[in-house]
Image (tube, rainbow, N blue to C red; front, side):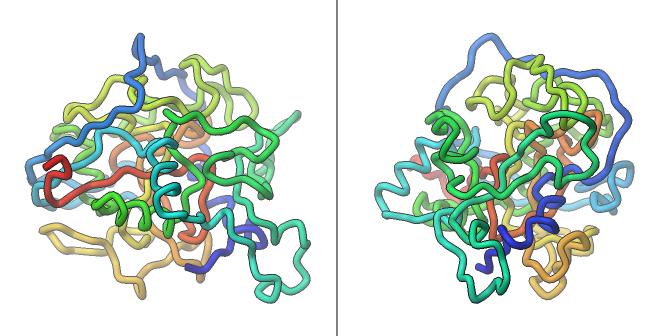
Length: 333
């Protein structure tokens, strides 16, 4: 995989932010359940079915809406946790993309500090209004999955979803676990939780970890969390899946294009690598991420809906992108 993170942060930050279009402020607030079901280790069997994928009422990249079907599959009830990823690292001696130094020859004239291992971290402006995404994203040397906010910040909690995972890292973990990343269609089918109609409201769902307040300067933390929350802190959807919306974005297997141009009806897998394109990050390989994160706010973006989608640079993680696996056969057998 090509890693474009440090030197290309100016172009990448818009992508990792997942909030490219300002929205009108609205009412806040996700409300957590009374107790978190920590470290949920469960797999849910989903019967295949037909549904309307995408919407023509949201952002342009979410359309066109069309009827598709997916086969039966199994899916993790919650996002992969830090402790689960740690077991993989220990067993395989795996080194994530964020821990690998960049080659100075690939970035002539670059600031040497930006060539150190590290990754993108959300940094709220200290004061005054934020002008653009560069005001709240920074490349932090030393940031990686165990210290997702940097080495001077607390270590990641074992029950939190793992972040700072590049696409290559997600694939490696999935192969070790005997699963795979979901297609966008599978992810969206699971996220709907059996609902027959795509939610259209841009109001933050009450049962999701989102940003409350004026993004990115004021987070009232009405839901009790300024950042990621442990798995199981919010009521699951109709299929028993936790945090399909909010908390952290989740990788899918599909290449990104700014519209749904794959017309395959049965088990669509998105566009080919040659057809993939992210207008905000031209020339950089990108995949679809889904679900929104704790940084999605009514005052700035509304991508905490099943149909919402965004592009992410495959060569870089952030501290609000994680993963969830699916399986073709029951992994518990």
